[in-house]
Length: 91
Image (cartoon, rainbow, N blue to C red; front, side, top):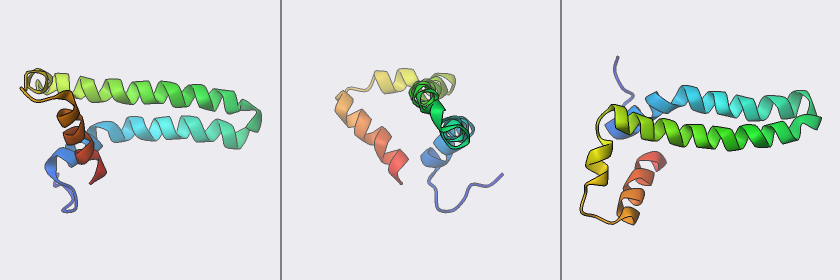
């Protein structure tokens, strides 16, 4: 399977790993609000749980790829690592 030319490898790997969960989170937020507007509270709960799940999946992916220990052992500040992680998500 080839990657799209518009995405760099780190971005492609993140998208490939998190896209199914992201789509499920978006649907679980939008569908209750559209189908039955009184369930807006359920959409809020789905939003919070989806954000937690996506964060856990992202860290789990780093752990599975055995790159989490490398990230945590870097002699740079946490803000620098956060900027680097966010820059891969913005492209």
